[in-house]
Length: 96
Image (cartoon, rainbow, N blue to C red; front, side, top):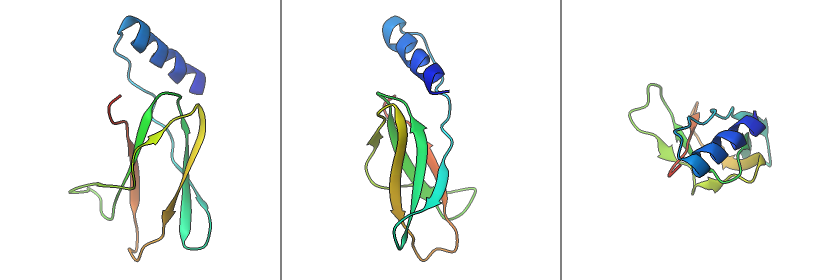
């Protein structure tokens, strides 16, 4: 999957072809006390903005920190566990 997304990004940059990126799959794992780790396979050259909401459908999504740059491998970010009984996450691709 990473290779296919890299090929699509190359084609889009070199030939100006419209390419729909392959959506990354978020994985959740325990991290340091009071946080959870979210990780996904990130394509080199893409920016990722993690967003959260406490209800679905969400009236609005809130950014979780600044956009993160893909380096061509697994990208991990730690998120503090809040007092909300549940939280939903999604990734946006700003500026791509």
